[in-house]
Amino acid sequence: MSEYYSRRNLDFLLKEVFDLESLLKLDIYKKHDLDGVKLMLDTAGQLADTEMRPFNEEMDRNDPKFEEGKVKVHPQIRKLLKKFGEGGWISANASEEVGGQQLPIIVSSCAQFIFGAANYSASVYPFLTAGAARLIEEHGSEQLKSTYVPKLYNGSWQGTMAMTEPDAGSSLSDVRTTAEPLDDHGTVYSIQGQKIFISAGDHDAVGNVVHLMLARIKGSPEGTKGLSLFVVPQKRFTEDDQVVMNDVTTTGMYHKMGYKAAPIVHLSFGEKKRCFGYLIGKPNEGLSYMFQMMNEARIGVGLSAASIGSAAYYGSLNYAKERPQGRRPDEKDPNAPQINIIEHADVRRMLFFQKSVVEGSLSLLLQCAHYADMAKAGKEEIKEIYRLTLDLLTPVAKSYPSEMGILSTSAAIQILGGAGYCKDFPIEQYFREMRIHTIHEGTTGIHGIDLLGRKIIMGGGIAFRAFTEEVSKTIKKVKLEVIELSKYGEKLNDALFRLQNITMKLSTIAMKEKKEVFLMDATLYLELFGVVAIGWQWLLQAIPCQIAVNENRGDEFYNSKLHTMRYYFEYELPKTEAIIARLNSSDRLLLEIDSKEIL
Image 1: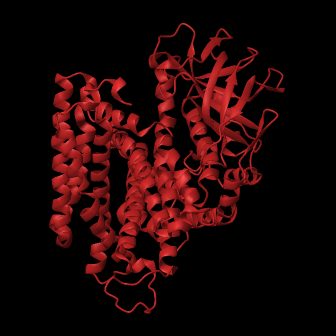
Image 2 (image 1 turned 135 degrees about the vertical axis):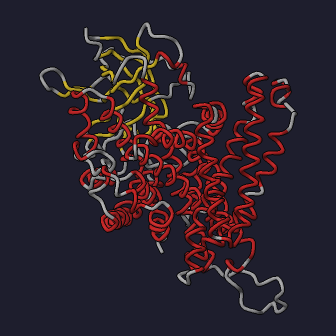
Image 3 (image 1 turned 90 degrees about the horizontal axis):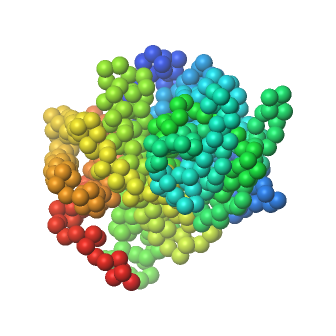
């Protein structure tokens, strides 16, 4: 067992839960087989063990430096990006035509999980670059592709996503960065504006930083309908192939509580009116293009949260197995030997809680990756339903691991007691790093509004129906084929029924009341949806485990899975009742109170 993730669990999810072997039979993935995937994940583990994990604490203690207008990061980042480029990890999902590995998304997600568990901050650099490269590859002109994609995929250039502005925050309709055409073809623009909180937006580990930026072409409509997407490099090429600075200035760097190895910067564009941006796709359609990268990033944020939670879980599990303290409650002899704290019921509760969050979240994230693979490579007639279901689950897959990861990592600190609160152990670092995930790529509140206000009703509710049918299919399988789990299927069925009912009720409110009434408790609805979705994933995992036990193939791994599923249904799933009670309430405190009365 690894000290920060379970390789056995990854193999279990890929082979026994999501049937990777069948996925590899699809035309686009035929060049890969199970042995090859095993070798790739072995290689990912070795890379994480040798080039990432040993530097995790050191990078946390030695922040990037902002000196003379330039950001200097840990020297290992340059070596790491080179290895990620040479190893094909940045281009893992890219097509062979552009030198990519053409890996299934579910496989590259497992590698990303390993990298994040080893050193979250360091794993962000290649992840951001891969997203930027894929977006240019899919929507950019041939010139943009040839200029930027190879350098991004080989790790010599950094890619970023530049959206947030000082006066707009997460409200993209208020973006004020401007773009003015410089040629008759409408491909080159003069860019002016500012962007804040840009991860890896400037650093000395690469030769160039390539920003994918939302800006408003002068004369375009107000709001999000007037946003266009541009490639804005830190350095650009002149007509005679000279490399010059592109009037992109780093004006400051933010000092964070965690996630320290990756700098977050404030950027200014076009102070000298010499910042060139290159249009991607059509004018005023930038947000639709950017959502590709944003949605990938949202799943990635959830995956990173699960990976940090995994490192915290194994850290606290190993501590609990080795730390003697106290005696059993019924022990009368004060001189009796102390027992390891894992023998205490409340410590076991906290360990099961962590495991249920981490492995439940990871399963949901790989479910999303499976849907993404099917939307990309499956039969044409079913691609759209997979895409819609993935769209529906994206806010859940981002938010549940992020929100519950905070509580999960907090439980890890609690298990270590005073030691967990000190830098002598890495758990406190995990807790600090976990906190950013509920903010990255949209706060939890934004995702609640996205789920309830948009995703539930899109396509006439087709995605929500597809989701409930998938959950019902798992419940039916348990009832008919694995009767030992039938009582858990009944509990999940009850929670699903309640979710359907409250969804219908809220949808009715949406037609009768103001929108703010409908969306008042959207975040609670998101939480409810997450608890049910993770319950589904635990029942899904329990099926092959119970079958293995029934066939006398069971071992500690399968038994631990079944115990964790049992914990989730006894301790976590019942939380849906309290949330539903609130969602059914007619009290509108949050809308009726005068803001002056919040003192």
